[in-house]
Image (cartoon, rainbow over all chains, first blue to last red; front, top):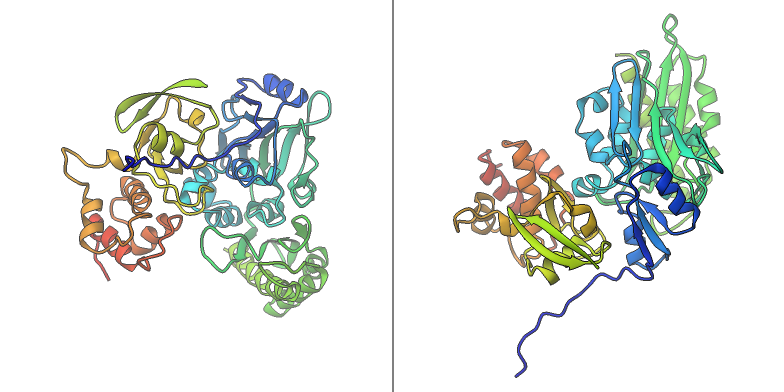
Amino acid sequence: MTPFRAHPILSPVLGLEGYYEPASIDEALDILRRGNGKPFAGGTDVIINLRRRTVTYKGLVNIKRLPGIADWSTEPGEGLHIGAATPFRDLESSPSVTQRYSALAESIRVIGSVQLRNMATIGGNLCNASPAADSAPALIVSKATVTFTGNGDGTRSCLVEQFFSGPGRSILDPDGLLLSLEIPEPESNSGDCFQRFTPRGALDIAVVSAASRITLDRSSGRVQEAVIALGAVAPTPVRAGKAEEVLVGHEPTPDLMAQAAKIAKEECNPISDIRGSASYRQALVEVLVRRTLEQALERAQR
Amino acid sequence: MEHYSLKINGNVYETDAEPFESLLDVLREKLRLTGSKKGCDEGECGSCTVLLDGKPVLSCILLVSDVREKEVLTIEGLPQGGEPHPIQVEMTERGGIQCGYCTPGIIMSAYALLQENPRPSEDEIRFAIAGNICRCTGYSKIVEALQAAAGTPIR
């Protein structure tokens, strides 16, 4: 008899030539410019993709030790500043975020699981650029901007809405680094809401997600501005511009919101895949847009 | 290879590892702390859950390099004076365990919850363990066990 010996089932992380932990942004950019690796923070997409061997990287650049990259701050009236490597759970656990940024808080609470959100970062969710990225629709209706290093020296900023260029692709250069997000303070006459549809409550990927924000004219109570963002219905998270237009300048009646939801359904063009058919996704868009508009309105009227 | 001095369950463990090895592999294969389980190895099942500076994380996708200067708590660190933790007692006595593979992860998630919220509601318990998948019990007995451990009323 041979003695029992546990068989080591080691996780393969293949093809890595280097592992870097830069201590400054300059050092990180230098490593990236030399083409030495993929930046990562929480690792909840990058490490998993490596394990599944769906990607290969020359090396890994752990950005979590960069100064300020995982810090966030907010002051009433000043909006929200979030370092790119801030774990979602840090934001979710703070009443100063959850009480003022409803749609963002609702989107964070459904991402993965508690354990995953202690690791997964808000910047990573954007850089991974999934069309179904849960935080994206809420960040779009919140008019969040991202700041990142551009070609050559200096930094650039853009709206989150403009950051994505395709499934898994963003306008970030391969040697660029997402540094931070800025979310403006919501106006008191506005309200927003995020909802998604998944078969499971946790650890699932959106079949469709939607976020809506309504800003009311203070004197007339009519819709001053409407922003509707959809996830998992296009190569990137997208706005439902025609649905927004039909709301502006009008009294936000249930009928009008139902009409806007129908328009959102017609103007989106999803694909069929393992999570749902195109027509099912369109049906979900109508439901989720109507529900998020109704909820956003209720919050705007508070 | 790098050398690491890892603070785990109040002890310091010395080990050599590549910085991109998972904490779970280091725990199980190098330090022989096999209480944390490897289920999916891609952050979906929760059976590898450990606490890092008091917060539940997934040790299968946590790189050992990120554990430096931090405190790790695994299921092996819960018993005090040779006695199982009350969560462990309730899980075994109330049938919260069948095959046992998800159990250490569930207990660590529950422990983290009770540290910050000693008397959670049923909804709060279910939210806290939503990242721990169990294919045996249907969760009811797990939730009852955790309610008992927290001293809250069971439906």
